[in-house]
Amino acid sequence: MDPSGYEHLSPAEAIAYQEELRHKISIHELTKPINTIAGADISFDRNSDILYAGIVVFKYPEMTVIATSTAISHTEFPYISGLLAFREVPALFNAWNNLYTKPDVLVLDGQGIAHERRMGIATHFGLLTNVPTIGSAKSRLYGKYQEPADKIFAESPMYDKGELIGIALRSKENCNPIYISPGHNINMQQSVDVIKKCIRGYRIPEPTRQAHFLVNKIRVENSEKNNRQYNLFD
Image (cartoon, rainbow, N blue to C red; front, side, top):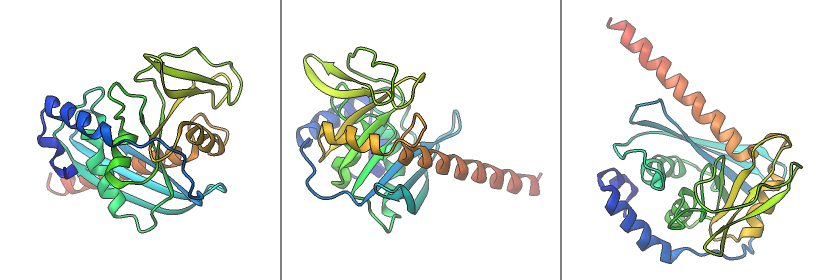
């Protein structure tokens, strides 16, 4: 299904599509060397149907920026827990298509398989593009875990009905953990190892941290541009 048609799906249709896609998920060891990595994020104004998507590509493991891409998109799909991909993936897909340097691995601000139907945004986007993806979320969506020790890189497994679906990782002392899960075409241990190498003194790994800055920048710039145009005709 073309992502541009997601906004026309009902929530029930979106769930049915997730159930269809989940059979295509591949969680396996990535044997190709990782020379580049990217972070992807979305920003939007409250109660707005305009989404600002951004991707930042880094040399890995040095974490120096080598490329960026942005896209501004419109959606009518509502914000529903568990169906985030149907709201955000179309905008991210546009940014992906604008990106001239495709990364070896993409980290998304959201869940991978740590999702009720194993179809978080990282998994969904990985299936769409066939790129290895990792979900790095700031909050837990699904799965049970014990709080990890308050030391850097302490880990706690996240389970759902006995299945390992993610890792709660303490990326910084005295901060809440982040929630790591493979999206597609990479395994659990590699996902955690990659994210650890992307931590640069902040709670959030550098790929999604820089993508967050990028999307907020274009959102603010676009809002200011629209306000200036509005004032010209006021």
